Length: 552
Image (cartoon, rainbow, N blue to C red):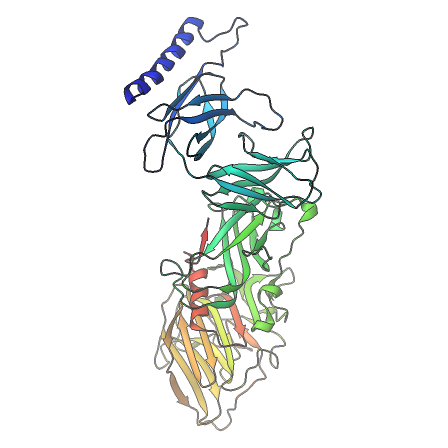
């Protein structure tokens, strides 16, 4: 049959339908609207666009269950141009499912609404089918148990042994849900929504108590974070918004979310922010290894489990592990007790001293806002602690910083003061002026300040990281090393000596002085020297246009 006859076939069906409408006035004898004169037409094609003749095409009613329903499924065979037509269809929602009789390639389209107007279905491309392996819920056994895809003929019986079942010959595409029923006499329950079936591949549904899952790729190639080397023990930031996540599907507060790597082992995570009404969440997930120059690595996020089977597992100490060098991590979110909480097991929480306000919108949720005239955040009890590093030791300090304006003198950002170590913003009286500065006070071989410097950009969020590794020191701004050689300033004041007695402060010194005029967020102090790849990956992941995470 050529294209002319195929087109004629479609219009003849439409003409018959219009004639029925006209003669019956679309009313039955009982005065109700006639709902059985719908028309559905479309084509099936091969990849590349060639028509797929002699393909079996089925029109399947919505919510059809292949194991229990006796509802009629309409069947047609495509002509030489790949066209098919169904007429006299009851109004409602349908699925079109097709298979090529010889090549056994398949296609499927869900959610097609039939009304009084003829429905033209977008051409369906037949592809090699895949399979879906379903890990069964606990106790899901029995001779009459089965899994299936509602509104299709896809399904499989469950064996009385084994912990999984495979549905074969599944057309590629997104399956609205995969359901499980223990018997043909009991209602089914959803195991997983929105399952991606892949051509020629097997999709595995893990953790069947969680109704939703999504793959998140970690792209470190040049098109993504552009990091060449592997990074270990990395706290990856996952930002959720209404654009990539439906908050109504998860528990309030995100208590049912989980993350796994490819072998289905769970990854520790910490919820920094979860605001369902606003559609915003910041979640830190510890990835043991982020591969360099790679776009195939991914993790899986799960949500939508019943409250009874999913208690909250948010745990900052597991993500920011002290054994891997994280000694203080302050997201700058405030606890009910008025403290700025340290996410690590050290609990070096920050006390709000003076006029500090935790209210500014930072790059990662809230941020500390400082007026430039008073106030700081003091990490009480850190004077002689894991945050007390020796001269020319090994450590790293990092923070997001937004300096509103400069003074004549310095502004203290993070550290233990001028006689141990600190990050600063240097004003007009400094030499050179208008610079970010990482400073360590040393006593030998010469006494004075060992500095690394970088120009300041005002009124802009900048990611500042200082790394000390013995006599080598590096200052990074927005993931790039800006100074590794430094400048040394000798100190001829005989009364000065390296001093460990002060606590770590943020936004100003203890007792006042060098107050920051701006905002500070995500302060980290580590007892290890971070690699350049680690620093860059942090920046590329945490910047507002995250370059690492890709939601699949």
